[in-house]
Length: 102
Image (tube, rainbow, N blue to C red; front, side):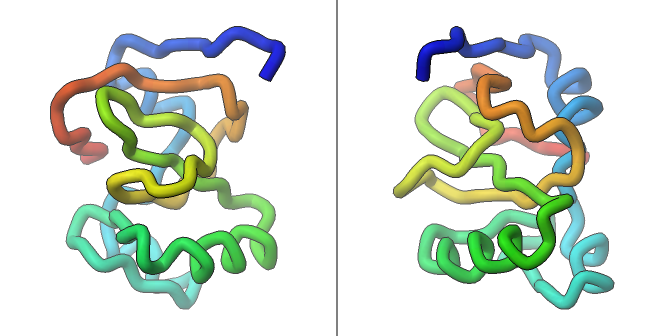
């Protein structure tokens, strides 16, 4: 990537900008169910969520990797979230803690 990453230091700002679906109930109307109550998807479901995003281009994937949440698909992340906000792949949230979107 030739463009620099754009960190968003404030958790609330990251959520406001990227709009992750943080509740499994938020996903049900779209016909997809997360594995966790806070809307996360395990790595075993990568192909399912990638296919979902191809069919529903208003969605994008946020990847939870070591020390950051990156606003794009990263292979073998710890887990993933679907989001409806800004899909700029250079946005990330640096964090050593489990991110709670709610």
